Image (cartoon, rainbow, N blue to C red; front, side, top):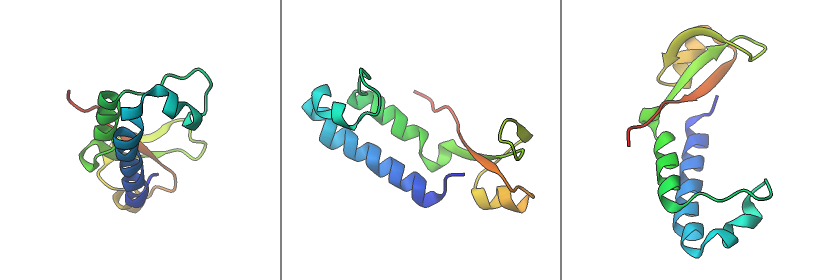
Length: 99
């Protein structure tokens, strides 16, 4: 499960990418992409992705130990609540955002 600090770091990295990489075009981004031939996201696409990592769009689910299926359909608002519900393994779920 991604923790608050990890989610904050992802949001900050995406903001940095949007503000410092996107304005200079796709060629500047290519060295940072881990797949050859991948087209980097445009600034508006990065903005939509950042929205998916906002606290209001993040939930947590319990998964069975092998990680292949959900232990229940219940989603939790924070990782601690999921742990208190008896979870030993969890997943971070990004809910769709409007727009």
